[in-house]
Amino acid sequence: MTGADILVEALIRNGGKYMFAYPGGASMPLHQALLKRGDQLRTILPRHEQGGGFAAQGVSRSTDGIGMCMATSGPGATNLVTALADAKMDSIPIVAVTGQVSQAVIGTDAFQETPIIEISRAITKHSFMITANDHTDPDSVREALLSIPRIVKEAFFIAKSGRPGPVLIDFPKNIQTASIEVDDIDWDPAMKLPGYRPLHRKPIPEQIKQSLAAIRRSKRPILYVGGGVINANAAEELTAFAKKSNIPVTMTVMGLGAFPGDDPQSLHFLGMHGTAYSNYAINEADLLLAFGVRFDDRVTGKLDEFAMHGKIIHVDIDASEIHKNKEAHIPVVADVKDFLVALNEAFTEEDKPDTADWWKQINEWRAKYPMSYNQSDDWIYQQYAVDEFWRQTKDQDTYVAVGVGQHQMWAAQFYKFRKARRWLSSSGLGTMGFGLPAAMGVAAANPGKLVVDIDGDGSLLMNIQELATLHCEKLPVKILLLNNQHLGMVVQWEDRFMEGRRAHTYLGPIDHPEALGHGDGTIGDTYPNFVEIARGFGLEAAQVREKKDYPAALNKMLTSKGPYLLDVICPYQEHVLPMIPGGKTVRDMILK
Image (tube, rainbow, N blue to C red; front, side, top):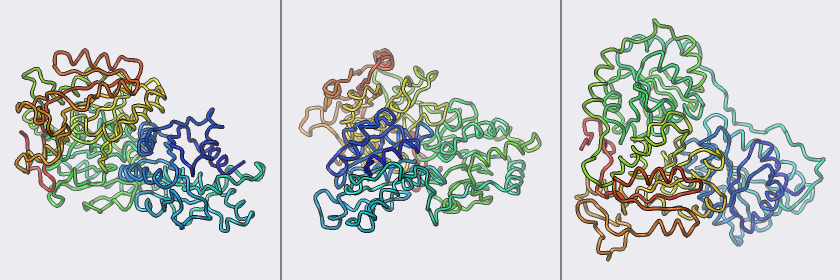
């Protein structure tokens, strides 16, 4: 077997099922090896390496598996960098493989050579480079080949264990093409990871007792739930505890789906664009049960005034997150699922806090500051578009990916996720162009499920080439395009904080007669013509402009058999509200 054959076999043996790979000179042997094993590992050709990296995330975010991507050396490898950084920020396990120039020319500025290990060191959980100590010595090359199964096994283990994250394997071409006898290969070698000890920490009984005492004494408790609960597959345990304790639940954008969004106990999500009532509640809470969160600035605003009245129980598998941004009164370094299992087992009726007055206050806030939007005319407001989409799909097992911008926040506000791993959002890095390729990965890993990319016109253009992948690979992703012809979130900040000056946020031609629309927020002719573009890529597509036509147009998209793009023309002057400006507090929340 060649080195390339060994690596592909090792990927399969460690559970790899979907590879998003774009070939090039330094990775051609790997693609030949993938071709041989197409019966066990599906290789999908993205139209850009970044798209392949986000598609790999789509596999990892929507399943309990590990997505994989592959690129050639040089520009192919550097095109993966954004996807790696995105996965690192959101704690998403992926394994990325890059071809590298042969060892003989590494360091000589050879054609398509980049030092991808050094480039990506700070944005991966770990990196490997498969090399021979002496590339001219057959015995040394043989040792390198024999190390491949161990390195792949370690890559999968590191990516998934502890706090998950991306792992990179850089693979010089001379090792890919070298070969050894199959009988010499140990496919399940012992790992060699000195210094990496992701202990499966269990909560100690005293921490459970302290937590129960704090819960029992609290009058205004709140569950503050993040993506760590989803990574730990602890949504069921969280829901059980919430129901036992009758404590209100608010989630971060990463935590959506950890608790049913349409449950009366849900305050939905908090932070900069979260519900007003969740932000008021966390501001007045006397106890925060912070599970799998990192006290991100988009949640906390002005850090020293965030939840200043409450004690904090902070549970996280990553010890570096404890006390990092906010001091915890009861710090627990443990798997949040283990903590919730232990908490549920120990919880009794006597531990249930008296929250009657607290719920009365929360429901007053909820009645006074509901999530609402303008429905007075025939325009298709973005909030309405998402709300109607929720109504038509809430009883299906729907997966929703989003790009980044206003549409992302409206999707988070108005789509109520009932299950974990159904919501895919680039939350930490905030990468435009994430939605379409992420949905592509979801569709590959979850055949037969409804997969929808809610996108904006600016974000979709970042990776629009993946429409070709949908068509060629028969991935029936639906694209709900909320098209306002502007970079909406930046426009919103221009309107709120920069006196409405448009600094390159209009996406149409500057000499177009409708460059600024009609002044009332409606859009004239649109550019580009997304319907024609989608049809050029082989997709079904349609455009809708009037509210009365939207439900039927949406239903046609959702019931179509193949990939479909619905271009929804929306007002460009609409803002995402509520909004707590960056670095501010609940007192500064903008409600209208």
